[in-house]
Length: 294
Length: 191
Image 1 (tube, helix red, strand yellow):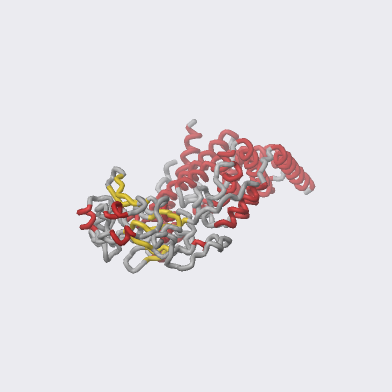
Image 2: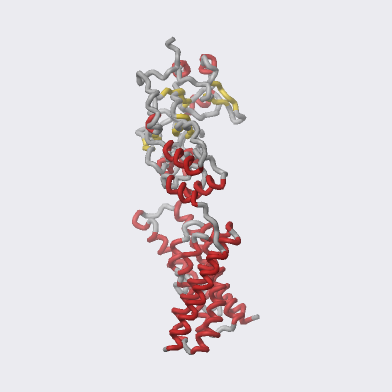
């Protein structure tokens, strides 16, 4: 009895002492800023910043390998908090980005190649002849992006094209990375004119595959006053692409496009994300400060 | 040598720790969703199991038997394994942050892993020598890793399979585990 008590107590004490010494000897300095930043981050672990979760991003910030403004969901508020913790300049506020679907070929517009009855997953459907539509560049429309979105801002439309709620989108980039067709892009929320087509086939082929395809007619390119839109051939084929640094949202190309492949959307509420910047309110919802009326 | 081979084959295939002895089911089901994490867990278990078996063998031989308190085996072994895992975690964290990152999540899980305690006790029950203890624990850990990797591979494929709604997730995983266990029954008699 005494034997048992003593020997177990001694063993426990020895292990305790060893662990205590090891704890002192093998101590790893953890920067208190890591924890502070982790607490400041939203904790959604969406991975939009490119690091494994909020903890990973916080560590990368402290090490210095990550920019301070990579957190999409955190908006401006978190960016300022992080800058405060790191003692860096707050800097100019970063423009909000939202996901844009670069395809308008829903079931009613795009010609279908075959009836797909497999698993409702875009990747699986893509393995069969590049998807169930004739256009192999198009949105497959099975909604893998809906599952990928951690913020529930994508819903499926009646024409089997995902609808992105721009007010909810935080620009985390998840759907962009997940889409097997790469038809989703992250674009500044202030930009309203988008080429809703990703087809790089020649005009005739594109037109046969989809009613609203870009047919590379270059009408947009010829009519753009800013030289912001052009049919660019990236080697895989041509496609009208907008240089968003030049685009003024005037919408002339939208009217000129013979197939309605270019679309102008309603202004997105930029203040939804930068609540502090309330002084740049526009007088009218329709006006986008393009300056053409002058 | 022949004896060692028998121990290895016996531990990996015939008396597989997971599929025949039903020890370590928790990580078997918990960490088998992805092949990569299964491999990480397998490595961590191999590491800890070998060290723990060696240490518990020494404790049994030179403390418990000397003091004639073998009945305290379980509690003493748990004490040893828990402190060992903590110690190993600290050392790895300091010396090799990369290894710590890849094992980090799994190490604390192993503290309460019954497979580690099970193997330590089996070593004593079968009155193995020190060399046999080491062989047996490495072989058992390999058996655990093998089962885990096979299972993870199957589960990755199950993700894409058209499983009936009522069997989705854990039910089909348990059925798969049972089928694997039956398959491993085929090794009985190999010795």
